[in-house]
Length: 262
Image (cartoon, rainbow, N blue to C red):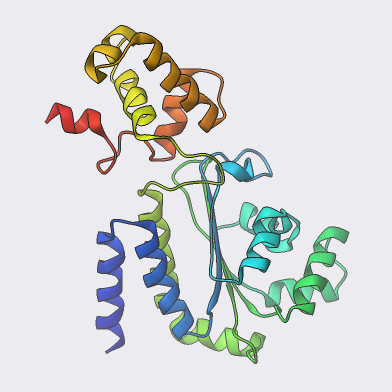
């Protein structure tokens, strides 16, 4: 029964401990509906008309590595009309929206070029979901490319019949990923760097951190310096704030501070 399957899937996503688990469950469901090729992007550092620095974003994809590298690594996503749509809207949009505006000449030149590039690869029909966020600095979006042979009418039929289930799974996936640590496109923190930042977040001085970690003050300063470099910030306070936003510190799976306090 479809309802039972959806409930089981939502429960599985809600209790998953790893981003990879969430992604696998959600994309398996999307593939069953005719969308085996999926892109997802999430940023906690949105500003203005930008999702922020690519190295601070989480990108997930079931596309082949070549397309994924071009789409995310090459910044192709930022030139697509649905990127602009996702920044300006929440909800679901089928790619018919793109086709209609392209035919009417209503797209910017770089957007029209991106549409032509995707069309050459057989990517014409699909769905984009832009997620509502609790903070204006956050933004997440999901792109579902229809399987080969499916057109806009086929996608509309899926939305009409299974749209509620599809969106429920997509939203559950996004909300769970938001609460799990992830490794953006940059160096991640080491365990000792996390620990030093967590003690600082608890209000400890460098000397107190050194005592609790059983290392010298110079070593604590080194851990904090490397943490700042990894997070691409200038101050330790900024590193604490950014590490917290990225769920890299003060998280139940990673937090020696929380474990020591128990």
